[in-house]
Image: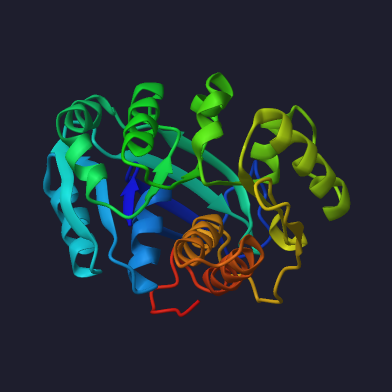
Length: 299
């Protein structure tokens, strides 16, 4: 499985008591390597898949450390290149319940990765079984990868961080195998507020909106309200309830859901079973202080 996306350094603050936005909050601060697709690559490796990562790290000691840690986790980092401002940074504040209270993101400079993919993307994508693509790098990268995947008849599973590219190029979603996002991201795509919607309302919006945009299959995660899904090719659709879990840290749960769901789909599972697999790994990730479960997991 080929994973294409950015790497971030996550700076996360955990409030020990009730989080007060305008006060000084006592808690714990952690600095860890993260980023949507870095987490996906680690999760896929923990799921027992051969994860090949195409990304960037900073051209310094921290970048080398992040690359080395991924290699130790079993991720193929042959195509993780070093470049100035190769990694982004994500500052996150979590309240006393482990829920995200606020965040600021600094994006990497994807110039070097774009050049690398123009040079070697064809041979890299030709040799993989399928792709997990982060759409929020640049429109040029997304367009190039989608074009090469179509050329070589490779399935593409997409995940987003800020919706910047997809909102400008929704036509890219016509050729994905499955698009997985949360209710806020789906609401921006469908131009409908789904943040407090019932699963029934969200599923109705998903079926209508995905058909209008021309998305073959799509999943919307809703945090503690579960997930809804539709496969416009087979006609399958439905709702998957959440699992009970004591929440420690909500960051990375969406990435875990995506990883397990994609692994199941690559294994030939129907979308309903893939969503159940994603729900199980997301629940396990919610129960640990970090962006990944850090242990092998069977779907």
